[in-house]
Length: 257
Image 1 (cartoon, helix red, strand yellow):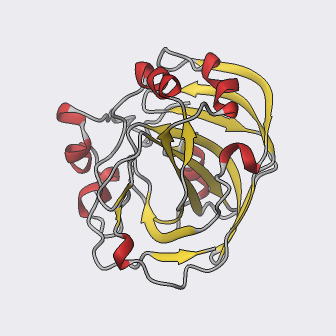
Image 2 (image 1 turned 90 degrees about the vertical axis):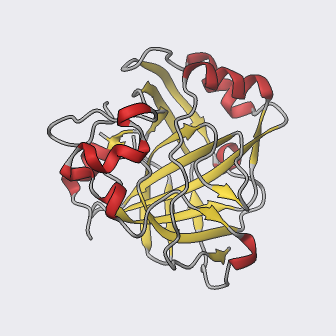
């Protein structure tokens, strides 16, 4: 299923439903159907909230998933992430904290080349590795000229203070719908990505409504770190914004470089 340019515009502006992907509201249909992470609008009900969200319950290639490292196969291919750009603003879209970026970042995978649009965070992590959550997870959302999406996922574990997050965290907007100009805060690959660049790759979906499929997922095998205080600060504003893992349904998870 091809994701249209119109849908990308909606997604890249909400958190994954990413751009406005993934990313200034996260409501991704014309009816602006509200969804969330608990109660009657929580993940187990997303497929019931709107016909546009039906893949949330009917799809067979949904994300996130658990990465069973004993079942990973070879063949993920080479991945190149060039993320030298700058953050222009931070947005609290009610579902995540999203950093909208200027042009400059690219992702090249065996499926094509994509441009970085935004990155945002979930806590705890959406994906799990051998059944274990990380403290947080960052999604770097990319799109190509035809509206196809590719996401780089980076696990974040508690540890040392993250110097780049330290530049952003004081400016995180606490109020839903608010944004904060961060005056073009520059970043490079070393600011967002771990030193080890081995990956796991699979075909999945957006992790928020409309949960559209055929999203090219690249997960970094090595996590980055953030301090306990940084994790706590994020969780004061946005916590339990993670969709539960979804059935693999026979999909292959492949290791790559």
